[in-house]
Structures are given as structure tokens and as C-alpha cells.
Length: 141
Image 1 (spheres, rainbow, N blue to C red):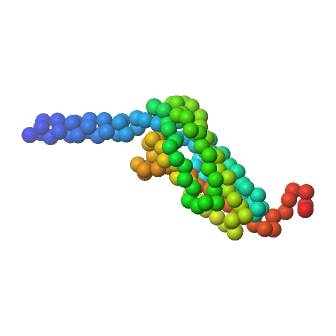
Image 2 (image 1 turned 180 degrees about the horizontal axis):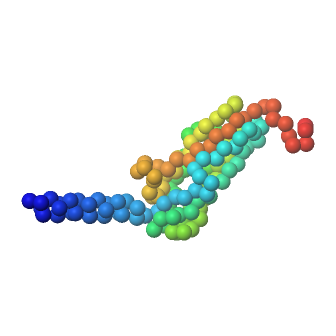
Image 3 (image 1 turned 180 degrees about the vertical axis):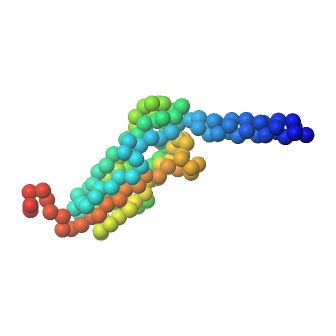
């Protein structure tokens, strides 16, 4: 009986290891600077741009199918070609600051074939900041 229990334990451990290894096979995002960008305090009016750059740290080409912001105040562009393992890609955002009033927190959803950190169906990027009318320009005006 003891040998049977040991054999079953080893089998279970082996299957669990195989499932975990399979889960890590495939394309993966690694964003330079993380998945959150803080614009800090910025002047309301001009479009605030930021580019999230990433590396595919996975084992297969990464395909970004769609990028959707949480509101219409953010324009998006992204790399349309597959990013090979070890290759670099990008997602560009343009936030209409004239539509922001004070502190804001926005999300941008990436639909891709990449493995996500916690098994989510999409990867999420975050942008935040504080849009104000009273921002002084560097030359004091």
C-alpha cells in the first residue's frame, strides 16, 4: 500500500510539473519600465503621448490582435507584425488631456496570444496622472 501511495504521489507531481511547464510555453510580454505609466502633473489641452515598449520573452512569436483603451479619450497604435522570441514591440498611446479634469486612471486592454501573469484573457496596461489648467511652463509663463 505504501509503495502504491508513493507511486501515485510521484505520478501526480510529474503531471503537475508537465502542466506547469506547458503553461509557460508560448509568447510572453515583458514591458520595459513596467505596465504602468505615470504622466505626473500635466497641462490640460495638448495630447500626452507615451510608448510602451516590450520584449517577447516567450518561446513563440507574439501577435497583438487588438488594443482597446478604457475610454475614447485615448488613441492607440501598435505593432501589427508578429514579434519573434527575444524581439521588441511597441504600443503607442495618445491621451487627450483636454478631456481630463484632475487625477485620472485609465486602462488599456491588449488582446494577444501572449501568456498573461494570472491567466487573464487579456493583458492590461495602466496610465495615470493629474491634468490641470494651472500648470506653469518651464520659462515661467
